[in-house]
Length: 422
Image (cartoon, rainbow, N blue to C red; front, top):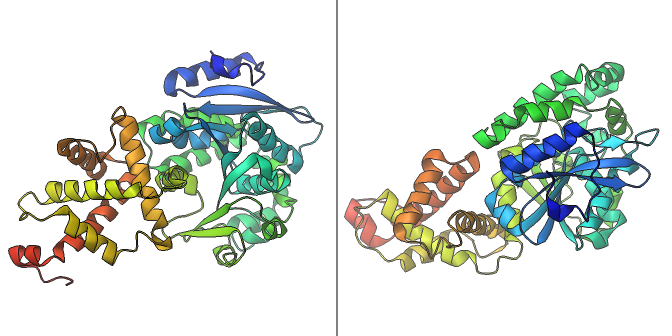
């Protein structure tokens, strides 16, 4: 059954298989599958999740579908704050194209139609080809968006010219077109699903979506490849930004020319974020960091109580035999050694806020700072031993930062005979 709250805003009328899938999704993970009429194009399937008030829009890349964002759509902290919308672009997933020919404008209009339904300006995230679509939409109707994040954006054809995929697209367009339409697109679906699962750390929740993700990608139309080949250059749009825009790229991206993306940093209104250990699929491999950035928004000083609570829990958890040292001196050393309060600390502050948001959502409303020490220690044990890759990275980074600061205190160095940074 479709979420009754969505009926007045979306016209549902898809084939029975789509309605049955929507019912399964709603029952399984609290995600509704609804349909949005896009004038002049057709009907777009939209995954909708979350109980929050703020609208958040995801735009998938190629070859993929809205289901690629499943780990984010099921993240408790994001669900508590946002009402999330992820459409299948035309030619992908379960969207139905009625127009005689698929165009880039149809994809842009899909994003704009879903954004208009939100009722207020959206935060929006697009990845790869979807980032290029989102950039066009943000430029066409900036009043519909309050912030946009482009992940590994495929801004123009030249960005992939040096990659294996780019050379194949230039030399064997017909062969690639055949591989991206049924029945051979099933192979593409298997490849895309396995790649996403591996990059995201393959949680049990995400692994349940393997078959549906393969099915979504296998429905891809060969014409989507034509859109890549004739992609309009998006670089001129970056010169007149009217919405705060972030561009993330992975240092290990083997598809895009990351040097060109890094060179865009001086553009006014654009924030370029380098992900040192990231590849092309940042929405998979760095979903935790992306969620942290989305939750941070304007974090103010909300991260300070979280840092203090983490210092107390880390010291108690990792070294219960430590001599008694105050949390305050350790915090002072952390702030001295690490520029958390400045521009360079924005990513760490965002991660602290996101950690607190996730803890609050899972604990029934109790913030991390307000929780008993035993519960905070249990949360850190979970991060260290059974957490997602993003949670383990967060714990390792916080632990290193706090212990370096703690060991620099004279009373601790003398107690354990440690000759560290003074």
